[in-house]
Length: 85
Image 1 (cartoon, rainbow, N blue to C red):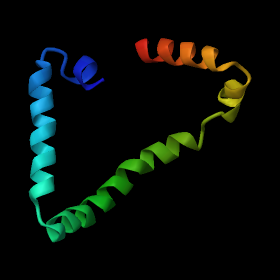
Image 2 (tube, rainbow, N blue to C red):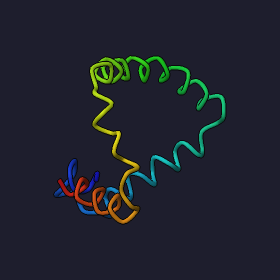
Image 3 (cartoon, rainbow, N blue to C red):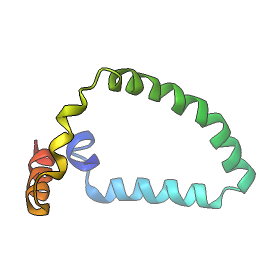
């Protein structure tokens, strides 16, 4: 999804390199630095999730009700069509 939607003209090796470098940087950091970063980031993540919770309050639950009425093949076909759209 990152390759198709966000960075469509960026080569795959550049995206992979960015993910690997970020992972290596985090893996080499001491545990207290990771804990500090997590402590600072947590309130921001909670603030970001507030609009999501607000919109889900107005969601109609009946739209997801028929999810278990089809077969597994029907669900996989639906997921494929949804991802493409």
